[in-house]
Length: 67
Image 1 (tube, rainbow, N blue to C red):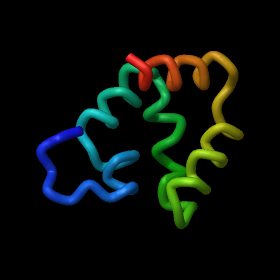
Image 2: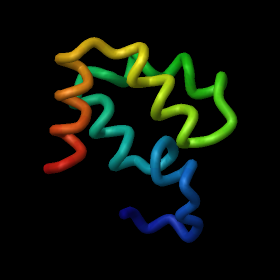
Image 3: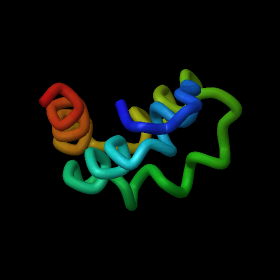
Image 4: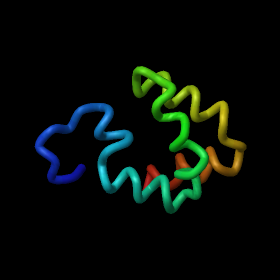
């Protein structure tokens, strides 16, 4: 994705500047940022995020990532 030398799953979902831009553009960044520290894996985070977001935010997040 980016020029980072370490492309771990955590970086790919949270640390990458492109991912942060997607989250910002989707309007989800403020909703999901507080729960990043509550989970131990990307998989757990994804499922927890989907519980916090409403339908429109979920569609926006998925749609932004598909572009």
